[in-house]
Image 1: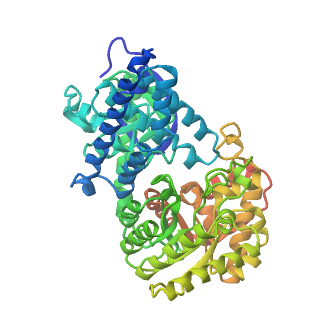
Image 2: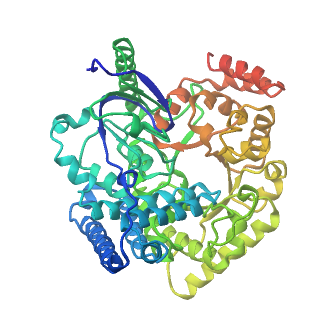
Image 3: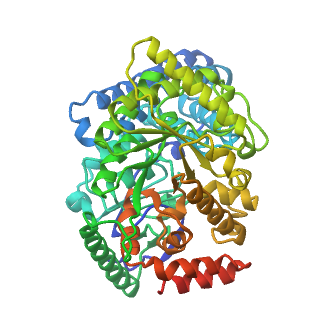
Length: 588
């Protein structure tokens, strides 16, 4: 499998879809890396602009053809198709198209180079944003630009070139896509194929590659920086999606070790599937509800396949991946209704937009620290038209099943009062228009700010349910930006203060009879399951792929044993001691 001149090395990136894949590299071209700067005489400027315009038209026509294919429903989820709509919008954006024409005229240069200059300027603007969703839209700009450049260079699309590369296409399931980045057009086209894994130089957990890999349940590692330049077509690869590692030209011993590990993982998954119809309860008979977190309506199918009892968190921010302006009420309603109907009466908890302070309706304000600025409910209350649009859409969807509304980042009672008033206003407008909705849809709040956890009674008096958002709770408790790699090592789920806040919230909610779930990453990590059970958690919400593993841990746990051990952990005041105690708890 390994060439004589091959050198073994390892690259580290971000894991966005777990599992292990073993195969050979299939490299995707990256046109923007191959653009030259050519000077043109003034008399040829209009001719060059016309060439650029033809390339833009060709790029748009290619997207429209893909958009109108009759088999798209079978190939790609609706949300990935929506990325095409976003790219079509970019192809009409004066900031990209008109500005490129201006550069050609002013600098007397070829269209390819002018476009790259404009792309770099726009990418720098997107880099100024702190919110990861907005930051990652720079990849949309790059992908649209690359599509135009491929048209200028007379090169085929990735999907077309893939079909012409017969030397590697005989056995697709053994191919690993290696790219600088993958556009939504590429990822949708790849839905027709059966690849082993995806790896890219750029991207994050909300990138197209990550979304595709999770929907296809195949390993993926992104953020590898230089994989595309360092790897050759046909190189043997191992993708370790759990650890975010790419091994290039592995030796025979490493290859055999990973083959054994892959077989073990496949066997584990096969065994866990048998638990789908098993009751989710502890050995002593205590029922535990397992819900699914989703980002896209298409994720609902995985939730149902996993046996989830409902949707514990529908992150509605995905709508901002679909367009360059604010999503309409009708667009939101269709997305929510699709999920609610698919769940067939199971509860669906829809969280209102949890957007950063830099993502405002006018897209102009960039605060110093978005994590502590006007975000989530703060932004929505300051943007009543945006809030009403979403509340009306959610309430309309509630007519088709059991819907609960979840409010993120609450810190003051007046925010709840203002939210309840906004909900009442949305209900009144729908009633006046004769639009049906569930008048009894429950309103709940996210507990993700330490101040909210410490002042819980004022929230429980006004809300029907609570949801612990441990991702932000840990971030705010420890004053750590969880997106900053320089302090990532300080992000500590078992810090004494974090454990105490979780325990206090669960205890207070139990005494008040208020249902409380946990929807942060801790819910889907088996290492924390027994600790959380022992502290009183009875509703877990996680990614669908994690449900079976958590269920297995639950049905192997006896609360009579783990509850006393968990209470003893609350007396510890050092992370290291808590970690040791949690390890012992997991051995009971």
